[in-house]
Length: 270
Image 1: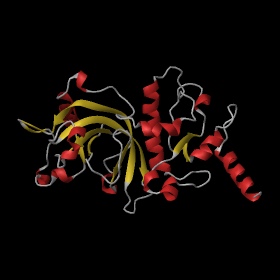
Image 2: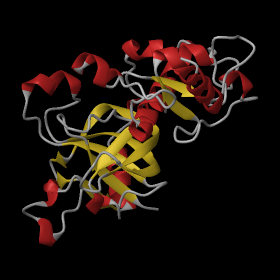
Image 3: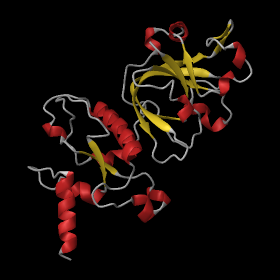
Image 4: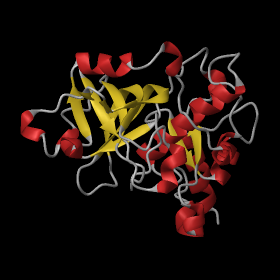
């Protein structure tokens, strides 16, 4: 089994959400592959603004997860990629990278001076187990879809049934799952409406950047039991108007092709 340390910087142009999406340069593609177990790591804190958002100001490990799908970042001109993250578990206390007996990671002799510059680093099973051994069972949070929920995003889910294939999901669990799927879907599809082409940022500017509704192509009420939702094939971005029209009638959810047909038909009749 392969294990990899992935670095999450306090400041990043990618704006990844911990436990949802992880962007990385193409040179790390050989390490980050589907199914690989990863350990989240943060380097030394260099900005006091982020102190409250970290478990420690010192270099430390703060979570474990598995790599889901690997997808090329179409916005990148450098061939960057991103991975979806599965089974994210956060640590309730930091595991410091350096203890009294030395670093937990074994640094190759050829990289003594620049080892920590690598944002992605392969480790063996023994090192992975050593990192995890620094924690008690209560120090690892249960598996969740995402650590934080931004309630400002929830309005984009208001047209969905309040379940996702399971009859008795807790309310917060629903929004945790939906938020993770939203982040992944936006990373894959962007924020332009798949039906009419409307983009909130283009129309309203910076204030509306990254705003879009995310629609299930198969209504959640028709999933027929708990089902894994694939953000690539099962979710599409829709503007608020198109999303409202799709769900306008309670007994019918329009497909994307039906919605596009309505738009094209109305345009011809103007």
